[in-house]
Length: 293
Image (cartoon, rainbow, N blue to C red; front, side, top):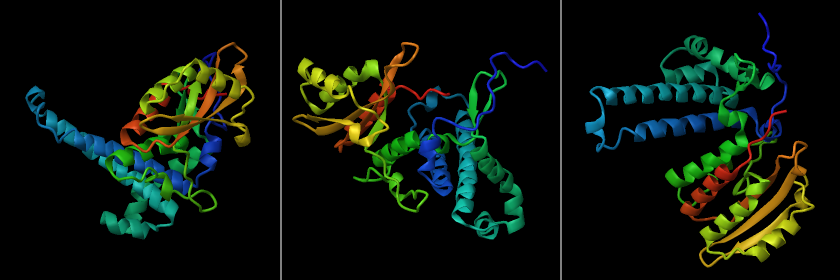
């Protein structure tokens, strides 16, 4: 078989290795379970409303019910992997599945083996050799993004006033909790002013040219790998007060090809549900996804 000329070798590293290292395999398995549970909640919610029933073909709601059942089976699989990482025996798991230990192991051991193998080979080339396909569930593959999104989802749908409902119970490699910054991400440097102007509008802060000149000067010598070198800028409006931390990710401010660089951003002080959702959407819309090596 002739190898595609642009095919990529199976890698041993990913852009998210450092992020995953902050969590134990047990915590990553729990994140994968959380994400699958959100998928199930979304599938179940689609069946609640009745207004669109007249637009649904006969039998259509059955298909949605089947889809929810398929996702539910995925929830069980992710729960089994998590419980094994947590130290549960096959006998413990089989008791809740209504089968003996041998039957439980036979059914789920292959998925557990795939889970463990994915830590050694985190992603593989697709059939074209041009794209990389993660072997871990996405939430475990890129936990930093997953934690932010899952905390936000839980804060909007499950808890009241607890914006770390997911991250607060995850233990790191040393057993302690790993609680992220309120909201964070990476922006294309060319989008930074737009981000700050829109965020300022959300908190009713009048962001003007002077503010931008101050920020642009303040972040010149920042480096996101040096926590002490980050630049802080308050956006204290009449409705909310947000604190923004900024730092360039090297190379700065443009990469070797002249493409816009990346600015890491962290926002604290957003306690409103609506504001948090807006900021998360803003980071996603103006973001700069990590580049693969």
